[in-house]
Amino acid sequence: MERPLRQVAKRLLMALAVLVATALIVYVDRDGYRDSSDGPVDLLDAFYYATVTLSTTGYGDITPVSDGARLTNIFVITPLRVLFLIILVGTTLEVLTERTREEWRLNRWRSALRDHTVVIGFGTKGRSAVQAVCANGLKKEQVVVVDPSSKVIDAATADGYAGVMGDATRSEVLKRAEVHKARQIIVAPQRDDTAVLVTLTARQLNRRAKIVAAVREEENAPLLKQSGADAVITSSGAAGRLLGLSVLSPAAGMVMEDLIQQGSGLDLVERPVVRAEAGKSPRETDDLVVSVVRGHRVLGYDDPSVGTLQLTDRLITIVRATPGTRVTPHPRPLPGD
Image 1 (cartoon, rainbow, N blue to C red):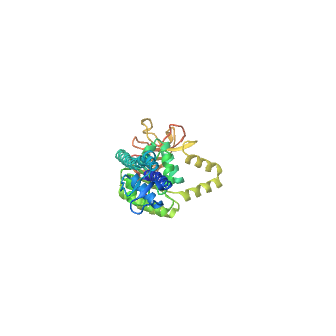
Image 2: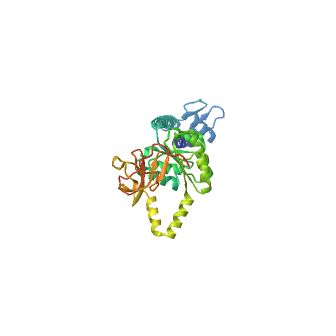
Image 3: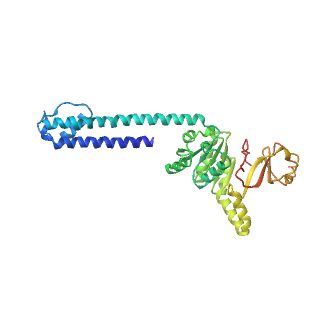
């Protein structure tokens, strides 16, 4: 509604300018007008005459009596009256049309939105997360960003994402983002307490969605899992461990940073087991297998319980990044530990 309101304000200023111009024209030629109540016309009478004339009310208590005043009414004030009406009627029609078009577009968007991704918080973490997801095949039309800042929402919509402005801790805001129909929810606000409340609210609205949340402090991670998050990433702890690893082994730090950066160098991807790999051990595959996802368990490549690979398994591998490299989403979230 912000844009229609700006249009209304602009049109009202234009109408006010027409009113003031008409009043000044009448006041300059005030000797050609007569007031039936007190005779001469002053500045207040000029504004009164302009108001009732432009609005086509026309009480008739102030009338033009000279030829010049009547000619001015014919050739100047009458066109101004028409312009005044066009401004007011045009504003009403434009606002109604804009509102109807916006409601139709929103209803159509909501009815078509299914299994989308909701990103709550579009700061550094949220933006990086959605860029990584979109790099693996998710369309921007399937991403809805929720943030309390209008500037952030403007930036998100400029990037091609849908935006909902509001406090994500409120269920009505999440409902506007169609959280109850979402497949994935990324929770990345600035504060840990906000992340907990958002996760609780989102989980109440959607029991089946995969919820991934970010926290600053590691001590808050268990609380996020209890609130309903399937996975919790500790940003400060991860950054600290990467710093420590880079100090101990700069080369190892570079490799880890390369794995974190999507689409360049080495990538960590998840994919299903192909038929040719079934019956083999993880070490016998062409890719460098890190873990095997079997059912709801994530097993290390050297776990004795892995044995040989099955067609129902999924592999987490390290591969050389190429334009076609992407993570195949798991059909259901893994439960928290």
